[in-house]
Image (cartoon, rainbow, N blue to C red):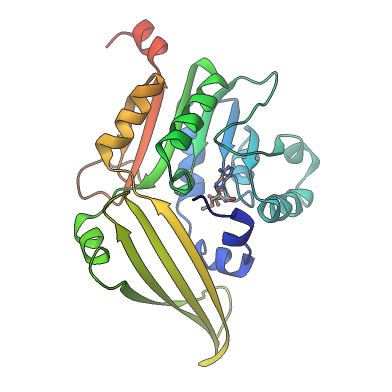
Length: 271
Ligand SMILES: C[S@@+](CC[C@H](N)C(=O)[O-])C[C@H]1O[C@@H](n2cnc3c(N)ncnc32)[C@H](O)[C@@H]1O
């Protein structure tokens, strides 16, 4: 069953904490440059964390998201930008598995930050890829960024009891603040879903000020599975990187960042 995204992303403080050291906004700007993309569609655009740097770099971005909370946060962040930048960003509330943005052909569709992993069934995943394909220009590309499943970690999480991992972080933006996060993870071997129950404790000068709870369910795409999904809807995988530094994908890469181009475009370009 899919989750209610307004519930998953209800706490902006947790979201800001998770993304306090991002290395991906500049990655996506570079992807846009390499694809020579004028017009970009971001699926699962959230609070505009990626869409805004793209617009600041001069690209036109349509940010699509299902969550009212996230779109409200994005609208607030966009509101304070210079008018010329604001004019390059459009927000759309829709489900990425079935959407229609009339009159638009995008040069590039992107699904950053594991957002595709929110789609849990094969039908939803295929439907998202098919719908996206209909919104691309003939030379367009779809780029998705998902985890590369680590077999050792998955095996640990498939045991009889959840695997609990503790992370301690210093919040570099707020002096005296640190954060302790506990992830309690269960991997289902049957359907390749990873369920993570998070407890996040916020401390100021070593005293806990408050605690939040979060429950995330995500599909773990194995590399050949992702390739088959792309092929099934008519995308050829043109490139595959293993992290946001554009390193080549291999079995130990933390991420799979996959560039799909339309089969028709591949046929024109040749092998
Ligand atoms: C991890 S956040 C990423 C947000 C943004 N791309 C970023 O990098 O900060 C995932 C986003 O995907 C959105 N999302 C999840 N399932 C969705 C769906 N079926 N349709 C549209 N958006 C969805 C969530 O609401 C959330 O904003």
